[in-house]
Length: 114
Image (tube, rainbow, N blue to C red; front, top):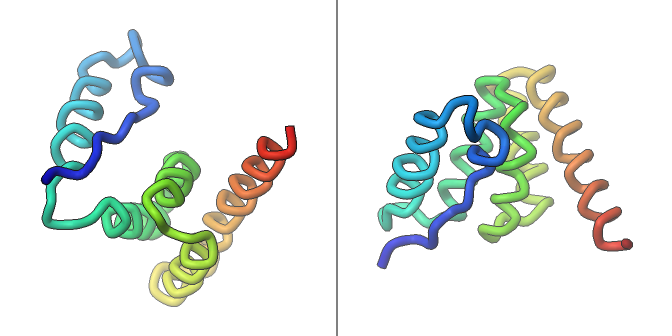
């Protein structure tokens, strides 16, 4: 059985500006690749967070941190993943990633208290 469909934010953020990119994001990346059965959504989230931190692609990190939490990755696991990555990808990249995790956590806490 295929993994559940992931709803991307590409249409909301890029919509009319880059419609072909949005189409590939929704149909190929999230519609096909993320739904393959060989890896769980949880595993895909861990791999994606690792790749984003390693490549210092922090613009996409907050979305994927929240998605990872939806996919069963606990916050303490995300912190441990980034700590472990620091030794391989560098302290500055890990420090930048931690700022995103912290901001995401504070934002989620604030939203729960509304």
